[in-house]
Picture 1 (cartoon, one colour):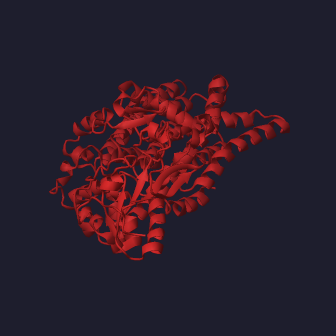
Picture 2 (tube, rainbow, N blue to C red):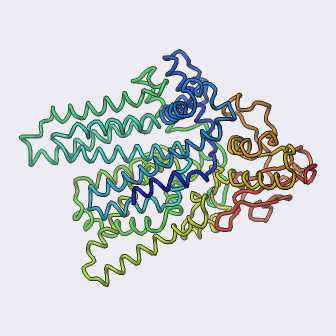
Picture 3 (tube, rainbow, N blue to C red):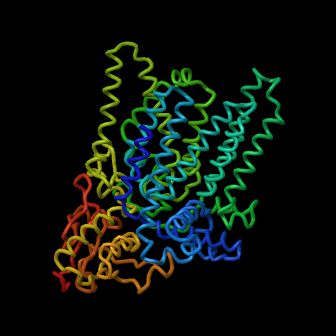
Amino acid sequence: MAAGTFLIFPILSFGFGITFDEWMDSNYGMLVLRFILSLGRDNEYLNFWHGYLYSGFYFSSLGFLYGTLFDTVRNFAYNGLHQDLHLFRFFTFSHFLTSLIGCTAALYTGLVAKELGKWRTACLAFLFMILSPRFLGNSMNDPKDIPFTASYIISVYYTVRFLKELPAPKISTICALSTGIAISIGIRPGGLLLIPYLILATACAWLYKWRAEHDRMKPSTTAAYVIVVCVYGYMGGLLFWPYGISNPFVNPFLAMAKISNFSFWNDWVLFEGKQILASGLPWYYLPKWILISTPLFISAGLAGFLAMPRRILKYYGLKILPFIAFTFLFPLTYIIYKKSTVYDSWRHVFFVYPSLVVLAVLAWDYLFEISKTSRLAFFAAGLLLLHLCEPLSWMIRNHPNEYVYFNPLEGGLRGAFGRYETDYWYNANRQAAAWLTGYHSEKNGNQPAIVRSEGHMMCTYPFLRKTMGAAYVPFGYPPGYPNLSPYLFVSYPPMYMTEIAQSQPWDYAIALTRKWPPEALSRGAWPPPGTLHEIKADGVSLAAVVKNPRSRLQ
């Protein structure tokens, strides 16, 4: 099952769009790669908005791999993202690798479940992950949240192995755990939390085991193992982080504090039918999003866990299960307590999802375990199959827009439209651009067309430049845009302002439902006048291709 997923996910990734942040984050990764290639002399990364607060591990590694395979590392680091030749291929390569990382996250979720139960438990956990539409969709083109999710659950798994192997953990476990922590820190400052996780969990495990093995459980030896993991994990996490390594005992913690109180973005967020500033969202924003956008087998499993906690704890034991629960609950509780800025659904906390899946799986697994009769076993299997079929059929019908899934508790995507953000990553831009390319070619051949693409232009630029060639003229951007600031983009007036068609010299526009006021969506102002085609999921519009009535084109 896992092998098949590692084959299917990369194939699926080829149909997904370029997300809103990919262009900006990729440029930051190239700045970090330049810092490394120049042996610390190129410090341009410091001018990159808030990017310096993050390590550039993923994107600089991605640039290194791409440059090695398709160009040269040095040329790509300095010029690659400014050349049309590489743009589309680079992002396709990025999605390919991100999909494999998503598979890895699902695989390690299964391995964590196996540490608590049996191979059946592991298979269920793996299945729950790959049949979670939002996880699957983001695994195709979210190169920030998915790699951190993978490194987080990998670190959790090897922490569990480390605890089980005390008082003499294997060298392979120590190396793998150090690497997992290093990669986590190398993706987000939040990876630093894995160090106190390890210290706290080891202290509890030491006290638990000391009663039975006090002759073998020497505090100095155990502490030495922990110190080795923490030092190598911490220092390894700074290798691709110029800001962090410049003052390794201060800057990483300053960065974590700034990220926890994220003040660099405070725009309007659609939540429960209201537009609310990100800094003013209610405390239950994340729990509500998790509840309405994960499949019902997660809610049912968690409800089952809470309904019989003593039985489940007794059956699966107290050695590891509390730690798994902690890795899910603590980050959420901390973010809510700190009133940290979050937006775009719950993608910033995707990393806790594998732990949640493991907790939900245990309830289902326990149900199978206590099914003593064939009738009860068939009932349990049928109930689970029913829960699994709903998200599976939804994903098949709505590919490649899996990540806009809402479960039946919210009435599906139809019930959520106008109440919650749907295509916040602008994934539908790719599909709209593909349709526009075919339409323009059929109607107007190679005539130039000015295209107004909402969101960041680089969500559509690589694809339209590849498919339309010189006929594609991006509206509102200066010539040679890719050579300019990697986070420069024009803020277009929303398409529901119909007078824009009279005043702007564009031929086509790709309009998005995001940023539209909910009242404009509900009163039927969508799609905009002049719409030629809509991109839909489950009958709900995500984007529209609009033709300017004043355009000279057919």
